[in-house]
Image (cartoon, rainbow, N blue to C red):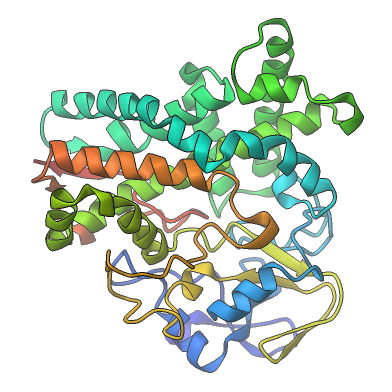
Length: 408
């Protein structure tokens, strides 16, 4: 580990800084993760504001910690780390049900879950196919090189989630800009608060409109939530906002990075072209391999707890490194290699337990349709510049690429 990666914590102990920057191949998680799994699977780290957290690096410990009821994701607990690894929230706040514990979390989950089953996602496949085909038409008509992020990775998830929620797709620039502020690791607390409140106000307005002009969408369902749930419009708007953010930003980054990985693995693409039934396995391998979301789910210990033989005191913050867990040699053979034949679907890209991503079924179907359609229509698609010259999102809580110029 480089000397520059070591900081001094408040108690004077030498501690690594977090988050670590990816270096070398952009598809690889930070190089420090392997050393952590081998020698310090539960280790101390320092955030940008100098506050300390614990990092949990091994698959078994991450999986166990994510279901331990003594470990909370409740954003109202003072001292919980802020999403993005940018510091500790000394006030404590909850922007959505994603940052709630049971039983409050369960109320929202039960309300929303019927709209995000695998059966529902599969039924949407023809509609998603039409959205993807339209985006690929735009790509074909744009001339070369063309930006895959602007023409495909951004509009497809945006159109899909707007349709499901009942949000006007014409407003996509508004919510994308606010989401970017919420994900940027350099955003101040005031920036974050303003972005959250602007989105919340926007969603409250949509809920009120849905009561007058109902549709076949999630916002209409939320607007008419059972009275016994005792959820006001601010609560319901927060739930809708969470779905919007979770179903959009991660998928945008997975489309762009996933396409880039596939262009570097032509043998795999040839196999997938010959046997398209292998695309679901390929998508799961991309999700495991890329590990883009380590910074999204901070936790805090509600009481003393032991993880991997290390005592975590009540009130101490944690990050469960799912990207590291997904490269654990105790679980995966040759984990640094992209392998569409890998049999194990036990990756933690969508989290684990009660807070496992609600939109994972939809995300899988979207990614399958996008990648299969993209490389069927543009089999020679490739980046227009060397991958080490692309601009990557090192400053975001979700790793990705800002632009991806491609030719075909």
